[in-house]
Image (cartoon, rainbow, N blue to C red; front, side, top):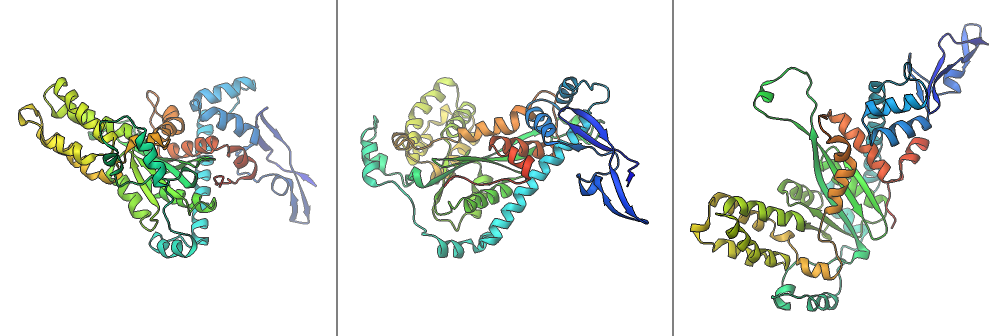
Length: 420
């Protein structure tokens, strides 16, 4: 038995330290080496980072504070300010950890989809019809009519019930709020480019999804919409919830709605609802720029918003079309609002009845997840990110929100499941 020339290095919650490992050789052949056979194999100058260190530095540190502040804190606690962990080292290891989480989810999603025959979305319709009952899970018409009768509205019940969008049974529904969140992209060099001179700034996109049933919830993070939609399908299959209604809540972005419809066109028990907050915001902003003055804008809002709240999009469009041309400041912007309402007509329900039925009208929980998973950490003053750095940190934060980070650190796996 002989001592290895290079000591085994550990970065732990109690500090950085080294110890000697040993090898057993028979002749010139090494039969046993404790640095590889007993401990985790390391490259030259590499440190083994313990679960406790990752828990403190990555989970409770990096996801809430900057890398520099985190390293200063843990080195101060361990009394290793001079020879402790460097913030660049912590940053690199956090990015590696986050990318491993994302790769695991991607590979697990592919495995689930392949195993259950959903690898190709174009073939999903055949598989779905063969495996599940493809019927809409809706509330009884009597319950909907009763809710409509309790609404205080200037419109009659027939008008309220005329909206074609159905009302889902919350016990047989999966709600999915999906949205993109952007952060500033880190420049490759410090030198000023032509784009900088023109004031053009590049951004990095993360797609955050909040999936929820009446019993459980899960947060997903993807590099883009396509990845996120694939993760949602895999999550539902793994949770045995594919027979449930899938209710998407979006901000009305055309590309997002188109992607959802294309990916889930085989799932006839899927619907999209335009978030009420974004609808109100769009109308206010558009009319502020299109009409002459605040008084005119507010008068129009008083007329169209009750129509939209009660699901009568056609009436709201007619009101806007009949506006006196002398009151219009920018006809092009008004036409864009009309096109927006017409384009999102299939996704505007009777919000009043949905509220009376205690069904969701908003994707605000998705907006909150954007803040908690990405914005709160990555949108601080002066911060800019690489693509892999942003998505890696968001993936770790999402795992933390799902209470799966401990499972990942200890077992290198995620349950990736909702309670059925």
